Length: 101
Image 1: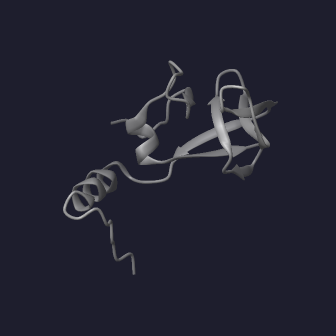
Image 2 (image 1 turned 135 degrees about the horizontal axis):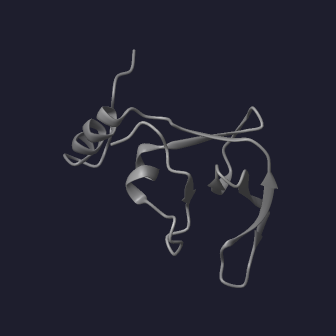
């Protein structure tokens, strides 16, 4: 698995840019130098992110989004090896307890 996140990724399962494996690994977004935690979709090459617009929903129950343009820097929050270990550890009883001290 590559250490570079894809050019475009979405949280919406109906999107062609949705990838559950990458989302499980954890993808963080820096937008114009600031950490963003409410990103629904992003595109590095086009330079935009879509963020939830409050708690409002459309008629299908999906969050309403706003497109913001700027510098997008995606990164993986977890190392590739750590994801494989955490999924194996959670298969035994449903709880994923790790000691990070």
